[in-house]
Image (cartoon, rainbow, N blue to C red; front, top):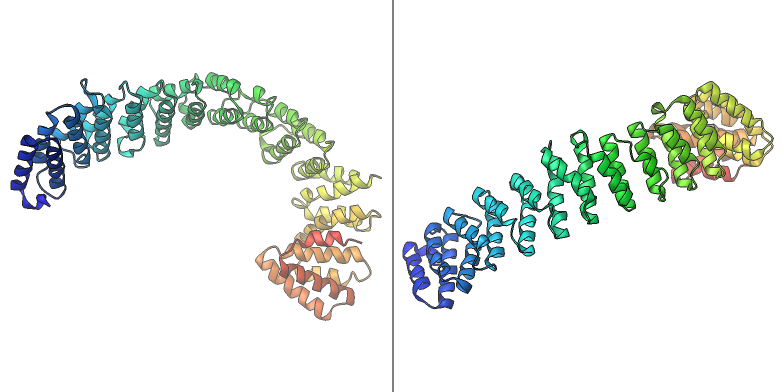
Length: 486
């Protein structure tokens, strides 16, 4: 309230600071700070509070705290006092108070306050250094000072400070090209004693990309060898970002399945022993690793030699895990030459083994996606296969092929004309379910099915109504139809 009274009120408060005892002087100093906040002269307020500052000891510390309250509107003299507090050789308790004020002033753009913070990074007190690095880390407006402070504190004896400094340096990589000193420091931090520091550093090194120093690869290898699973995965990500495949041979034999899967990613991304890594993964003891290798064969086929793909798939098709074997066969059907796929499937479908025929029928989905008409020719005879499991396996696959090669009217005719063939009737019904997966197909399927359910042959009407119910219920209709395969 005194602030509204102007200079005369400030003069009265200044007199109190000079002449009154400690408690009154502190109250008057706070009043001067309040007067500046409501519009009175900030310079006069700072000068008046200086009379409390001159008393040293507890009064000076209280004066410093009042200056901190005024730091959001810093004057030159105010920043000088805060800087002096942060460096005081007489009273170390002033240091954290001064740093707090400098942090506030730096946050509103005061250049002198930022320089003061940088100097305070050398303080002997861990508490003060923590305040400094925490301040610059939270102040996006002072990125240059933040990087300078972080460079000073990256080797601090306190692990928490080193981690925060590393995080600040890592943030600089998100803003474009970094200096050679910062890049080299991040690489050095890969070998820090603290795990959190190493994790932050490895992410930052990955962000460097082509700007990473040449020593980065060797440092990543050392970090991988000493790290736990999370660190090893981070090192592999960084290696991929840098295009360095040196970790592949270490990672592909690591104890962790996740790391071995990461090795496949790195091998393919860096072009380092990709074929041998895939082969090794397909022989892995962990099914998840083998499945990951198959997924890479399908998605990265252009990065691998054709003969390497053929050998890998031949190995995977013989996998003892039936699901992986099927996935390998399906992958073969998706990526191998069509004539090769057709020949392999045809041979498998003629085998005496029911399980082999069922597996080949399910795997033919890969061929359907590429050449549906040829797949129909290959699969249609399986509707009469003597084995129930083979007929159930082929049903969803041939349904996709029928939906891809026939119009709704043709599917309707297929359903009507299959009154004496339960499997063909079921296959036509399943094709309508496949057709209904899109909005346009759903409308067309419902229109055709409505006509059959109204005027079609007796068994066709039953199947049409069943299909309408499955479509309306948004259920897994194909799985249901498989379960009622005769």
